Amino acid sequence: MMIKTVIKGDIVFQKEPTKFVTIKSGYITIENGKIASVSDALKVDGDYEFLDFDGKLVVPGLVDTHLHAPQNAFRGTDMDLELIDWLNKSPFSEEAKYSGAEYAEKAYGIFTEGLKNSATTRACIFATIHKDATVLIMNMLEDSGLVTYVGKVNMDRNSPDALTEKSADRSIIDTVSVIEATKNLKNTKPIITPRFTPSCSDELMKKLGILRQKYGLPVQSHLSENLGEIELVKFLHPEVDFYAQTYDNNGLFGKSLNGESFKTVMAHCVWSGDGERKLIKDNGVYIAHSPISNLNLSSGIAPVRRFLNEGLKVTLATDVAGGHTKSMFSVMVSCVQVSKMYWRLVDQTLPPITFAEAFYMATAAGGEFFGKVGRFESGYDADILVLDDGVIPSCTTLSPDNRLERYAYLNGDLRSGGICAKFVKGKRIF
Ligand code: GUN
Ligand code: FE
Image 1 (cartoon, rainbow, N blue to C red):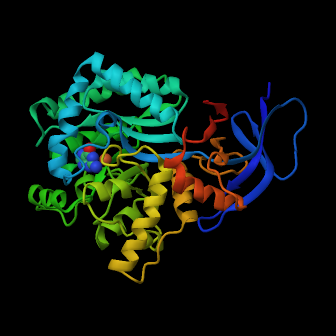
Image 2: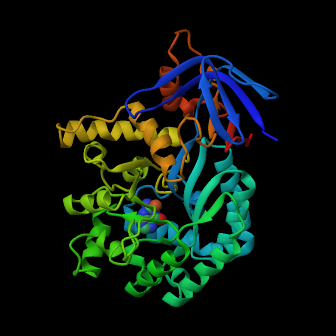
Image 3: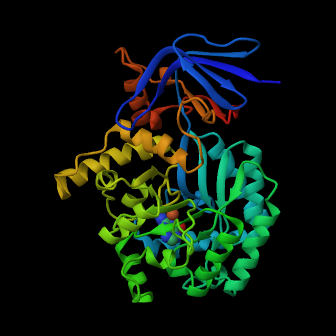
């Protein structure tokens, strides 16, 4: 039987990056988990469920293309360090704790509940090296109704003992056991996750490339984030022209060694030079721009306008806990803000990113990593947020798209976050 739902509200969505389309008191029809129509008139026949959110904003769900679940526990601490010192102090000591089932259960329970209640509908998530804890969080996320990719992290060098896998083979065997243990999950899928080049031996990278191809999986990692990290990669790999080749030479950068394409998302790319950006484009690699993390870890400002001018695929990410907040609305705001500073202080030929462009990156652009996601168009998955911006008192009258921008900027001011309903693939999460 066809299940139909109609949502009524002030609909704000995009067909292109630079503009919003608004329909005041409009209707979205959902059929079998997918958007069927978006209209100013009620267009549905037969039985349907009617959800009246008149006066509230109805917008696409937000896609966070890069965050670390185990780092949720220390968000907002040790924020006075740069990347490599910070990794050694906070993430590495925290992530070692996930060898224990009891700690993992508690911490991942808090993480999953937080993500479920946030504006995020889809996410690409790093777990830790531990297979049992990774299977555990994947099952928790499956129960949440969110759609996610989750990676068991691979690392076999330059890391503390507790986080150094005993061999490349051990790392591969544990990765396979996560893939096998989660193969029946519908909404929670594995993703190959070399942490970053400094923590993965050549042998491990090579074997991950082979494993990726065998199972046809996507890839996530970090790239050209911070100057200290890039120096380290140069020292470890004098043979390459630029950092991305350390992934690409092993079939882990959007194209396998036989030329087959697969989805890859690389966090940051703050310092990617001409050759690296060309490879990102040629291989269709998605960039996970994480401006809040880049500020916190003094990584720099990614030249997003240049990326867009060159036709690269730019998505947005919190990078919890390099980024202290899980709010994708805050990430959009920072994306606009840092682009203004880049334009003002670094390169006046690269105009700032607008709020519409930032919203598009967090919805349509990030959604593409997951398939037909992130747009209010017929046939797309019905990932929808209903926002109650009436919780921000004001006596001015604003257009729905101005209300959305104000909601993004002021969301930290809201008592309850102001999200009154969330749907993923047409299923109501809360
Ligand atoms: N590079 C390698 N590991 C990490 C991490 O956990 N966070 C960030 N921001 N960068 C990394
Ligand atoms: Fe990260």
